[in-house]
Image (tube, rainbow over all chains, first blue to last red; front, side, top):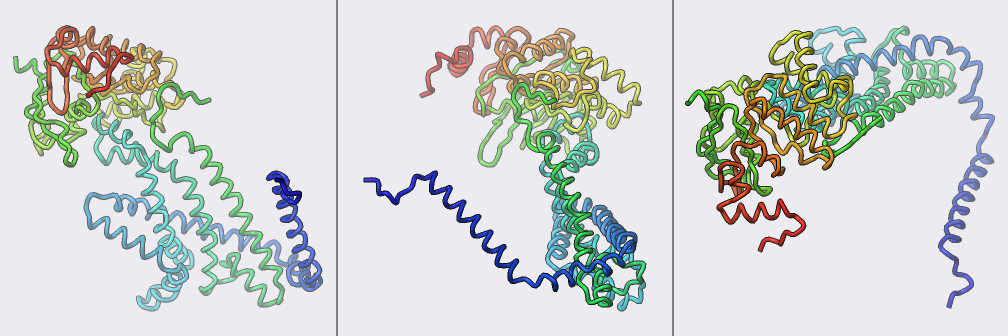
Length: 278
Length: 254
């Protein structure tokens, strides 16, 4: 009853994979034939333009991007820990305040926050922030909302047995938090916090809205500026690569930390019997 | 005689939602006494133990330990807990700290002992539980039995007047149970006051001054170990013991 057309399951799998490769090759060949390679090379791979960007794209722009991101991250982290504790407070108003904060800053575009602190607040209150304060405030306030949620989850992920053991030894609630819970929570949240730093690094590009002196340029502003004078997209590509120089190692770090903490501090100790680890 | 009394529980009740876990428990423990609490799971024995250091807040009734009423809203519960050691079924060693730090952290942060003093006390107690060579290990590197013995050393380092054990061997592989029981037996021999929730009938029979059989939130039977385990008067105690001592021949409860 087996018809000659009917293939075995394995055979059919092979054919389907073959078709997938064929489609891929067809698309690639079509694109290669259709593309205007000279034009692309001129726009994106203009070597004289690229060469002219060095070293300032590294020494100024890349460094500034890193500095802005780290400033925002640190300020955000300092703000996020009390917010996380407020979210876990037994006093309802503290929880409400933290929840409103988190919902607000997660819900509005970071762009609006930058405009607010770059133009709005200085105009309204006759204040003048320097660029570092503006960036730190804007990135930090936005980052804190995300990090507070991450840290709250991390604190809740610490096994309740740890708290009970600490309390049974006579530690107060606060002492237990500081000595036992938060150190363990930090190990748990290190990978997601690294991801947060990656997001902030990309968000730091929003500073391009603000008026910057040349020495304050970060990657996005730098690239845009060169684009305006050379009409070449090469600096954009370079800036993109520079972002990757920061973000790819960070995401590897994040994955490494995740693997390392995976079996050690996360989860509950339902471990019965021997659980030896090298 | 009142000075001899270290724990007294009066008419203790506790419910979780609509489930009444403790239904009016009275219990007194004298200094130096070893009391074992036995009973089927869900009988409330762990909850009772946790009420003694108020890890569980009773709904009503009084808890008096060392002359202080812990159920008084003004009681300094943290201070009382310093001298009530507790050992958990799941060990609960601080996972981010080495063995030595596990045993010194509360001494230093709670009792404000100096570093060298704390380490000295810790080493003495680790030696007592036979784990002097493990002080630099992390908890995950230890077997369950070793973790539990560190947990006992951690509690002992606070110089407790009373030790509470919540099924300390239930999470252990059978061949590791003996080491932990040996340490507990030694403690009892030294005169430590102990309240032990356990399924180890042999241990209870040999070490306990008094055995409590609990079922459905009440103390069904209480008395000398030989009597309660060897010759129980209540039918429920007999059924329970038959099932625990001879699990292979157990019949389903009707």
